[in-house]
Length: 385
Ligand SMILES: [Zn+2]
Image: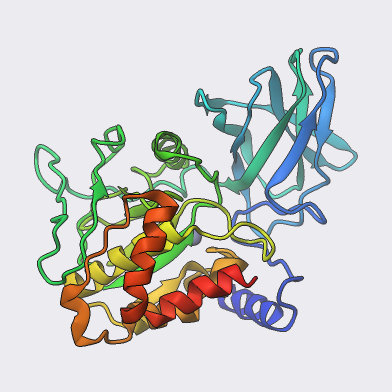
């Protein structure tokens, strides 16, 4: 049954690319209101009065008892409600658990007493905010709370020392720097990791914020760990997350199974690019992020002997539009960049994707273009957009 739905969904996407939206498992969709949803919040209003409301969600194909919202709330003086439609009435859920970071990134969880698959609305009510703001909802999902829990394995080692890879890869001349878990202030995992043997890579976008500097990217990492743990996962789902500045953040240790593709996490390395790339006219991944993706992936393919046929976009494996239409449209170029045998000049090449910002990347690009003409093509296709 699932397979049929998936095939139909893929066919719809193929024939009506850009217009058809298919229901992703557990992801809420609202007709004519795509994510990210922006709610303009006017100041004042009676506490509890409704400031914003989505339409009813599209029909769901599975039961849920938990709703999880992920977004950006610049002003904390508002409240989010979930309104579940039962016949002519709405049952109002107030949040059961939430976390808001000082920069406004937040998740909020809502729980029902029992399972349902009735549609719902997301509403925002006044808490007496003094000034206008815009509340952004990046995603909203529903699930049965026990079903989302990851299986816990035996601890990788008694004291939970993580297996870091060598930042100077032994098998290639490409070099890059990793921002370790301890560097970005990762909390302890909520359970034990399960060891695996990587033999494939899946590319994602975070569908979250687009941090403007390193400090904000660190906060986004802390936020994502908290958000993913709120889903009941052991830890952040991805193995690597790349910021717009090109920093490569360590998520889960690469030798431990992640949580990034439903049912296909074993031996699968998850790399995610910060930001949302669904909008064909929206912002692109930065040159720095693409550079780091190439350096990291080249290292991983050499280290774990991963071929081009084992490099996937999330949507190749699952019922989702991740990593977004825009990034997915560049998968062909990315694959040719990553997997075409490079010339014998590779030894003269050293990637330093973390220094110099955009100007530095441009300088490196002029050196790289000889070895990676496809990279030039990729970036030109960005500029000529
Ligand atoms: Zn994904």
